Length: 365
Ligand code: ATP
Image 1 (cartoon, rainbow, N blue to C red):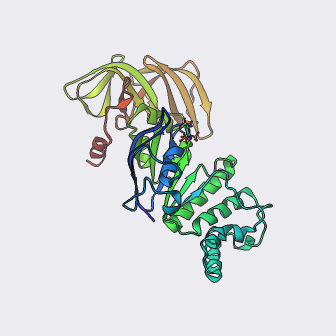
Image 2: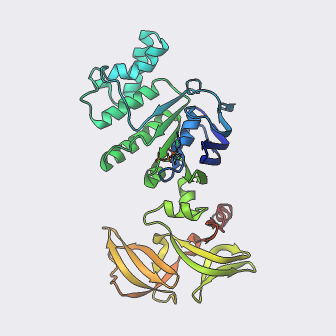
Image 3: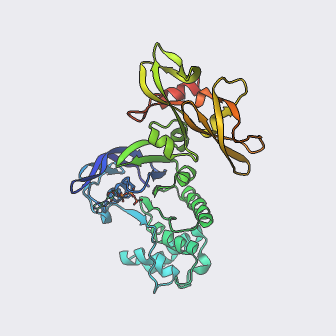
């Protein structure tokens, strides 16, 4: 098990800068997600940690030792790829024991280790089966077994469930997380799926265009996004942005949009220019007494909730409300927003003007 530190790591491919100066720490035993859209630099970051790609600059530490220039074979990590290639001519047991046999480990010890790993993964009964006829889930388990059997310092997984259908993917992600909880080994997991990242991860790094936009616990990132990109990448539907020309000064605890004052979680000083009022759909509430109005453009029934799309003076907004609430297209409704959940952004920089540190103070008194 290991702590992994990335310090100012950058990667260029020729003149193309794939990863900008990235800094974050993965604590010992964490299930850590690298999340972002296609091409944002997640895989390149993971490959640099693994030693499959050399950083152009910056430092990578595993267990306190600088490994940036060390080859993969000397880093003692195990990689689980999306296209988990098993050796087709070997049975399950032989596939799992392969890394130990190539290390020259004595037979009796190999048998014991493979038995333990098969037990952990629940595949003891298929150890003698050829891998050819296995189900997708069992193939994934065998690939994991081959990674686990070496007792590496950390597991690196690059979209390991990407090829599976939705239902099975959910099942395997729960199984992977449970396996991690049993073993407690540091795991770094690449995904573009925000739901998967929030469900499975202890911490998440959100990347975009090679930049680390934010890193923290899933709830921190969801509740207090530090950029508009993070706010819109996490959550479905994503955070609403109502845009307005702002002039906030004198430590005000409100912002004015279209003549209506809205409370915000902390005072903002000197915020001016084009601002965005960020509110998640579940925090947009209907209230007859609110002077801030929206016109219902569409409703989308989702079983227990419905998504209502409304036009306001500051742009379109989505609200998630109970499905039993009767709402018709064309209705004019008053809108109110829970002040504790508002984030204000500078539209030009895309950055949040309210900080997580201050929110923590507010939440805990
Ligand atoms: P995906 O999920 O699509 O793999 P990603 O976030 O993992 O996306 P990377 O694979 O890290 O993205 O790629 C980041 C950028 O670097 C992409 O624009 C990619 O085309 C580019 N890139 C990656 N490897 C190389 C390479 N060997 N040579 C040139 N460009 C590369």
